[in-house]
Image 1 (cartoon, helix red, strand yellow):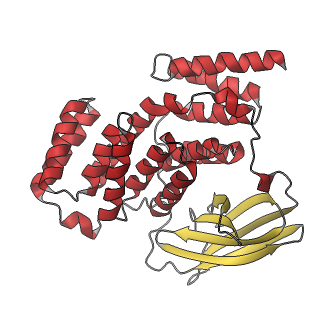
Image 2: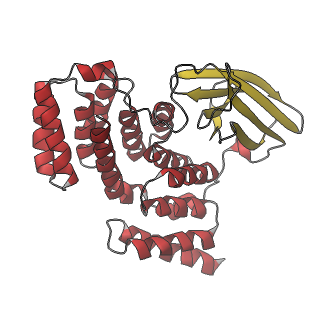
Image 3: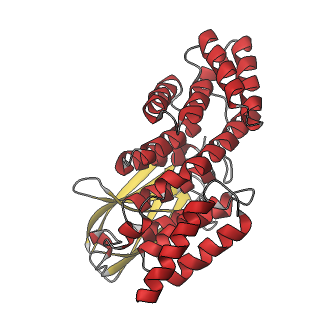
Length: 340
């Protein structure tokens, strides 16, 4: 099943690339807006910390750590622990927060009053049954055992067809798989991927059902985050993507979509952090990452950096589906530099 899930992730990557031009509309309009959320404009203190195994005191790598407003629960910032179990939120406004660490299905938190110049928090997480660092969470859920063999075979044929760009064939086989087993989360997710650009509401419906059928299927959360991004429902997208990250912390597609959410919310600094994380995890070169990074630089008015990213993208993918949008964005950025 891990191999099939990998193929589905590849298909999703293809479709997000094809759909990305829609997300790039009016990038210069966004650049004129304020680019950081108010919470980060006047930071007066620093906050960092560590996450360790409560039983062994060993550092935990790749645990997601969120900084949440203690009053309303809003996620103010997020980070991931490094090999030493350390995380750093940098400069934050003074106030009361909840620092929440998540790894797999385990969560631990601590309340912290950020009032001094430098603040640290140390979280101890019980992880006796958690995967080791670097594990992508490709486990077989209970829901997988219920799927009939014939439905699995049709799903595999749909995967193979989509990998060959035979989308009509993919639709045919995934439809047959769902006729045989309507609660097939993998097949529902693949059908959503196939409909992502042509019928986004239908894709959302399929993805919501996929999550109901198998709440541990990380890719469904990621694709749903992508669909919500396309609908410009960025807060909802981030909620789905954060859940996906907790289930599969090494899925680069999730960080890519999170960056798109942050760009939609005009938090360009956070978008760059997510893109850097995606870049560190991607097993192959994915030029569309350069476009997201360019958008973030434009939002921060770092036009030279944006032009460099766009020029590199056009060198690597001169005839791709997003090359026209990238060329237009490059020309607009050059105009901004000339005016400046």
